[in-house]
Length: 312
Image (tube, rainbow, N blue to C red; front, side, top):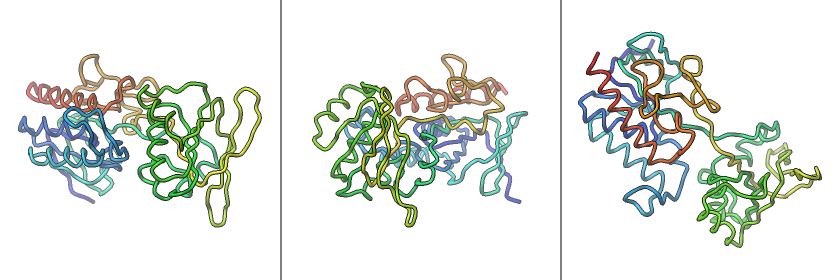
């Protein structure tokens, strides 16, 4: 059995929302404990160029998250490298269990678990994960220096991944099932001007093809959404960039969810349906999904938690 620890505020997750909540709750003398989760720093750790963080015209995502962690620690928050496997919100104080075996008992909980990459759900995609199929260009792009790669998607994530991969790949093919992109116009302009990128419109991925021994991707089979005609586009790497799903597994049977799994909060606050439980960042935000709005919600969650605790 692991140890049992009590805290006034337990913060689950370590993206901009989690770290900002830690800064504010530490400044409020609540001695928060933050459990980082499986991806310390959240999605920004797999983003290279961040150009829309106020005060930084240009910053690397991982560097920004290191600074946020250092800030939270300097304010007095305790940062723990572990992840929560179970959470009981049925009674206060709330009880959580970490993978290390430690039990955390908390008077208030701030959920900041963020979102995770979505996958296409193809058996062949699953088979080649880690062997040529990836959802993180910044993690795996360097493996494809001088090779051809394919990206699927039509939003900011897909365009960012495609542009980043041109630093390594000889050619990047972007596959999109529609005839227009949803990405920001400035991102689209960069994409269309890049001579290394080709866009294949009105096509979807039907299969990832490759060798099985040793395992490796040789190409992707694509289908024309209008004619149904199929062809194979050769590539050494395939990057899935079709967005993210909220990481709400811990609370899916305990809190109301909407829009595909986002935690419902009271409008204008971070309060959930359970008093003393607050949600911030991409876990609850299906509209904006920006680092700066996540940080703002982290601030709100800490202030909401402080107000709740002062009344209890």
